[in-house]
Image 1 (tube, one colour):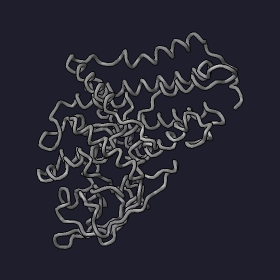
Image 2 (tube, rainbow, N blue to C red):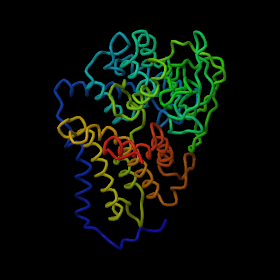
Image 3 (cartoon, one colour):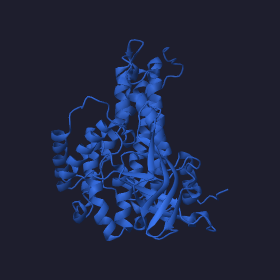
Image 4 (cartoon, one colour):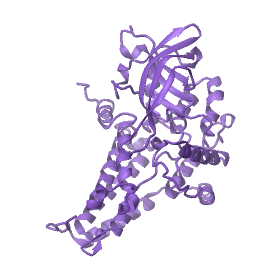
Length: 430
């Protein structure tokens, strides 16, 4: 790659000062912890250092959407069980369902330390983060007893059956049918982008029970459906990265017990929208654990320090440094917005605005940041995992391609922008 042309050079001293200040800003602005919380942070950090498994010798997922082999699944299942057994997963969930009954701040501290120390992900995310909180919130005692502990200890893997091949994010138009037949519902149709569908024991399933409903949303129902059922099959989908993790799921006269329905017939849309609030991070209640490997600006700064251009580290190029400062400011803004969202007095004008916009802002920031990392690599940006000359072993290329799934899952960036416009700014649908 040709050297960067330095036609406009910002003040080097100012850029140096900005870099230093931005890198330390997160620590400086972190809220002060109570002594017992600080002590617990030391405890969990020590446990993670002592118990994090060694490199297994095969490629581990960067997100929960790349669990594509039995080898990877077994490794992550054992890790999640180990974390739960030690009492560090589902800490805020009730004890009778496998949790610890602790204050939510303790799980937050665990998650922060997991993120900081780069431990393996807790893979059963659809159970831990979406189905589990939903069942805790509106499920019956029987449903809580049946499902929650298996989610935490990784015995029961969960999948999500919302999107369909011809409808994408338009969930109101789904066509998968669920027809009542005595003590069963008979399911016919298909779902796509079913994360870990080939491994799942249960699925949160949105299906149409009343095709004649006056409003299309009123004809939908929500099921906690068993996947190991005759008539349910899956077909793996290969991702851009060359890995697997998604499937297309087919239902052909699949019979599931009628008591798998959650709520009543016709309430599916409301329950699905509540589920999406958990998926988008707008509602609390997740069991904890990290679902995506943390890739922050410090990682990009370290890469820029290692790459040389014109005989010196790329980090010394003033235009590159100016761009990095802009990314650092944006990363810090995301962190501060998260803190602000927990302070009602600072969000009174637009309630839920930060929660509803967090997914859009975060996933698009990381997409652009990772894309810039490839730009800095020059011609090496075209290499990938397995190429001997690939920068950092192709880590950034894989991270960039994986990021597209986060800008699609839980509602595409375009859908998220519409949600903000309609539900925060009050703009009309048309």
